[in-house]
Amino acid sequence: FNSMKFNDIIESDTPVLIDFYADWCGPCHALAPIIQEVKNEMGEKVKVVKIDVDRNEALAQKLQIMSIPTIAIFRNGKLEWRAAGVQQKQTIIHKIEEIAAL
Image 1 (cartoon, rainbow, N blue to C red):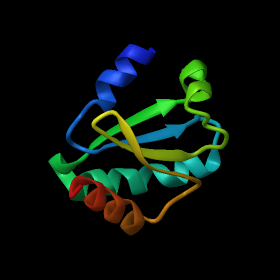
Image 2: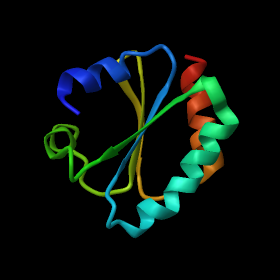
Image 3: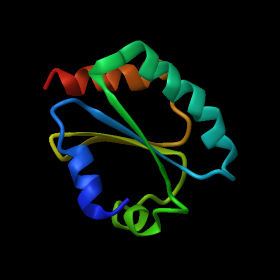
Image 4: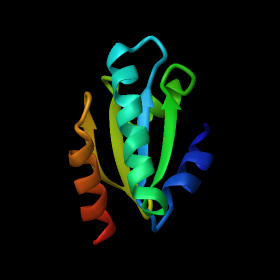
């Protein structure tokens, strides 16, 4: 990912859920099926993007991703919500619905 590509992704009227992870991160593996369930339930209401922080260090530093997993929801290029650690599916879905309603 470069910054331009990232900006293209988050410049969306549809909420964009970004999962910042690393292959060696245990909690990231625990979060992955939760993110998949969110995607399955929300369908077209959300875009889901996974970003490997080890492969995208500059972007992770720019966004100040200090711990992983970190999930962030962007809409129209703006960060609307962000949380570190494994989140519950309902928490994520509620946030996406809240942001979509803005």
